[in-house]
Length: 474
Ligand code: SAH
Ligand code: SF4
Ligand code: F3S
Figure 1: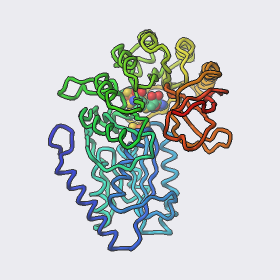
Figure 2 (figure 1 turned 135 degrees about the vertical axis):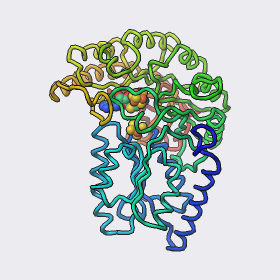
Figure 3 (figure 1 turned 180 degrees about the vertical axis):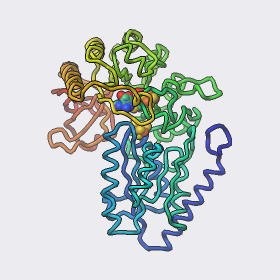
Figure 4 (figure 1 turned 120 degrees about the horizontal axis):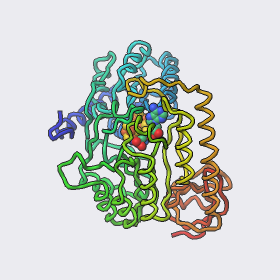
């Protein structure tokens, strides 16, 4: 398919551009009103970034965007498969679309994203959700124009979900959110196969984008006024390993840090097995990299970690944290945790609490284990009753909330540099802002500060956020 490895060849991308032009002409012929599209996204920032490309392609095809499903000529739902809860929400909402389609039989309904790459889910849509017209997985995203063209000219239902090792498609059109925040995908897929996780099955293997392409994209974003650049990958620390170039993630960060302009570089997610002092040193030496490390540890017990196939021990994780703090003393630390992995006992769960107490994270993303069909963990015995998992989960929240509240309280009275990234809709604190470590600040100040850096005096704090007033504009 592609000319070089997993990179989609220019001529194939050119064909898609032609489909976009043809659809634009077709739509103009059919109606004098531009067609309306509704795009909804579930899941992680990777999916959000993909949806920006879906919007980009749709815009090229002449669509405009609306927020009501009923009035849409085209509905695109970009789905997530990471936990059952996300999937149930998608199925509920897609089920409800039978009503909008009954009112508007010409409405085209597309489902895409990770959930569609699961064979059993595709089967379910095929059989039980017959109002869905187009289904495609992440690997076929770049062929969306072709699929839509086929639907518009030939009709029928289309399923494009063949398994794939993953692809990189450069130069797709993109409609981004407004500055200052921008997402930049640096790599696709995952090689780690943590035993509970569906992502490697639906997103394919790790494929890094070429560094020159990433640098050019970030340069263009900075020139357009974006000031908060988030680099995305399932495991950014293994960036470059698949390229025939001598570049790793630290080197990429150093190249991006050299781009002129006042902006912040963030990245998600780092896997502990590939994080190293080299990365921490880079964070310490590059002034544009935010001093925040999201380093998911998932569980504190070594037997459980092994069963999860995470590739590190509790001791190795704690040592990494020590090194990170040595290089970047004020580093803000966050993590992901799973409670109730199959076979984890409450005694083993105590090790998770122990890591929490030792590290004192600034914030956590916590999940109760959700079995994913086809993963090794889903075949394991899972004897712990739901109530016990729920109880452990609550203990985890209680321990962390106390820590988060205490850490946030320590900011009161301090003046910190923030990037004002949006409006909050609250009267007392109309702005939302982020510290250099990524902590949320509800800010009192003028709306014209959005998109700029400012000095903020922190006056109050809660478990989840800081509150402050603008002391000085920059
Ligand atoms: N690549 C990232 C995580 C992507 S998924 C990393 O490795 O850190 C985001 C988080 O969802 C994971 O860190 C994990 O905590 C959680 N998660 C993934 N699969 C899950 C499952 N089956 N049940 C519950 N939580 C899960
Ligand atoms: Fe899933 Fe593990 Fe890959 Fe993260 S590193 S996406 S948790 S398999
Ligand atoms: Fe992201 Fe969900 Fe897919 S977390 S990679 S959208 S399964």
